[in-house]
Image (cartoon, rainbow, N blue to C red; front, side, top):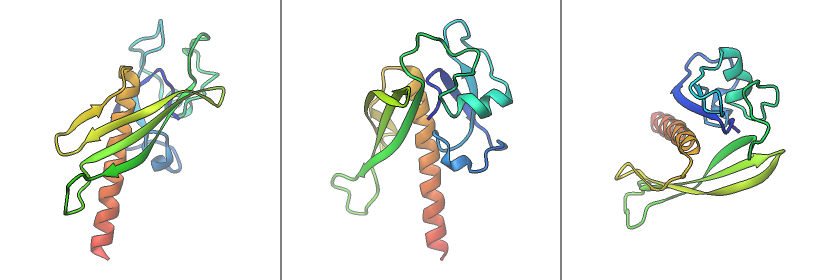
Length: 153
């Protein structure tokens, strides 16, 4: 679960997480803070590692007290291919859940059309939408690596 005030910008290829693919956005990301009064501030590498990429950052000095959520998580809940005979996935459905104190406070679905490369259903909060884009990028890269590994074996 990523911090709901984190705006990811670029994938971190040299992060110190033991299993970066297990992170909430599918990889570690650099970015900036969007918390009120801290918009645009760049977190330190330590803050990116401990707070931004993981959520539930109660010790983060930028985290506002009056926040709606503590963390955002994503999952691929479906990939469909309407009328596609070769099995290509044209739509990828993501589920998002915003949590506060480990309980859901908001959730829904986002749908990406990989043929048109457009979001059919996007989130109104630009931060959550950007996180969904990062998660989707990591997911697509992971699926491509798995497909290449299967083809090589």
